[in-house]
Image (cartoon, rainbow, N blue to C red; front, top):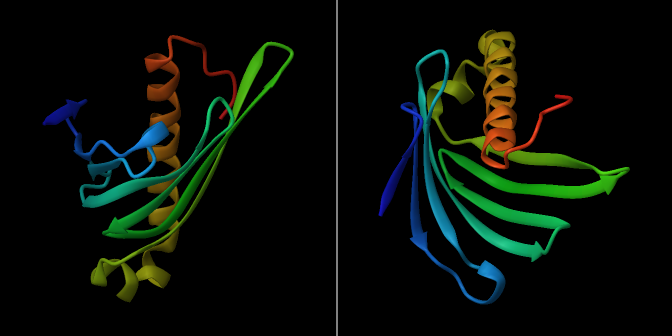
Length: 128
């Protein structure tokens, strides 16, 4: 079943996975602020409740993502490590010329994602 998350993103659950959701696969389609789309799957490879999520990306992005959750003085901090590369040939071919634009675009996408996560969790985003 596909679920629309805002008008520029699509998330589709492809496999529910097993115990603790390990093996869960979700397909993502993201349209960037500058107009290109990325489609990738993210397979959950590690989950430690209230602590760590890790996943393997494949498709237009390949690599690993890790999200670490820590709590200090009643504030939950999320640290994201997204170690991926693009498989889109035009991005790879022109990455040196487009690098500043792509970095700006990426920062905007991440900030919007952080705001969306805070809204979904019904909490305040205090730092990005």
